[in-house]
Picture 1: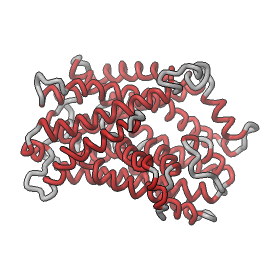
Picture 2 (picture 1 turned 120 degrees about the vertical axis):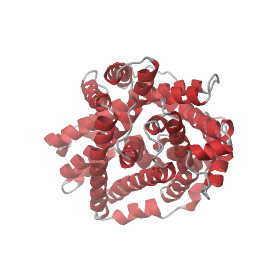
Picture 3 (picture 1 turned 45 degrees about the vertical axis):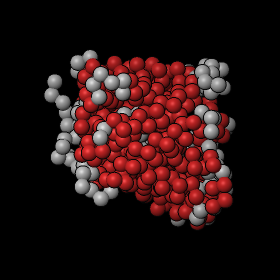
Length: 445
């Protein structure tokens, strides 16, 4: 079977940006930054992207391009008869778990988008936006329809192929998403009282740095917002040819991903402060707090429609990269066609997502890890266990299994003045920092 490739370097960069720019940038970044003091957190986040995120992004993409295989096949090819490939299975499992709950939350975003299209969100529900949201997600069937619709869109894009599906979709989605977010940011800063929100985001309150958890939160957000450790970037990198230079592309992806996060902060925090909302509202910020703000705004119905369109587009661009990880594995391991692999994996993930959705309602009493419900348990296992293990393994693989010459050659850094610094970061500093994040997330340090 002839292996597919990207049509262009730009296509790869847009697809990789699409993978990185998702609910994590718009939904997660906003509430994590809000909970951790704003400006000082933002500086730590940017430093984390530069010191850990981008170097590890280059590691992951370079492994994929060198092997020209899926995540399991890459380790098997580059380290034959060695146990490294076991971590590849962990990556496939991570993508499966993350997309199982990600597609449910993305379905909520689609539902909100539709309610703004029909004008239903321009009226205050009798039970308030919070009560309305809780009533919706706890239903048995309505959330499943939106979950199914979202997975159907994702499956269709992936089964069409790399060039005509994933690359083409991102060439359309990413520019539209960028324009929408910039337009929303411009509108947001014109709101009365917006200056207080911008000050919260850009004027550091250094006192928050006394809390060690802020450092961990910034490192974790940088790590997870770039889709590191799950195998999406390794899989995308495997569709690159040797003609595509990696360092410039990975820096571009890291910088653009960070800009999207900052722009989402400019969209959300001025609006939050303009209407007297607590910026540390947590995960409900997007689905409860923002609709309340849009309701009070002039042209709030239009702003809400544009925002949830952008949120849905960002979710789709990330979900197709997550689905591609197990699909690429099945295509190689089972010699399966792309269409069949996409349908099988997509349907299994949909079924897994059904348990997540019901876990918000009739199965809300079911806890899997501690007192966490099904969604939070899947999120904890994938984000706090599988991804850090995947990320540290990639760093150790390139830093310790490869020779220095092999590592620099694979990443196109031979004779590059920053090659030595990158190698030290990957070999020593990144594994140490990821280990700290991992142990902290488990409550050990």
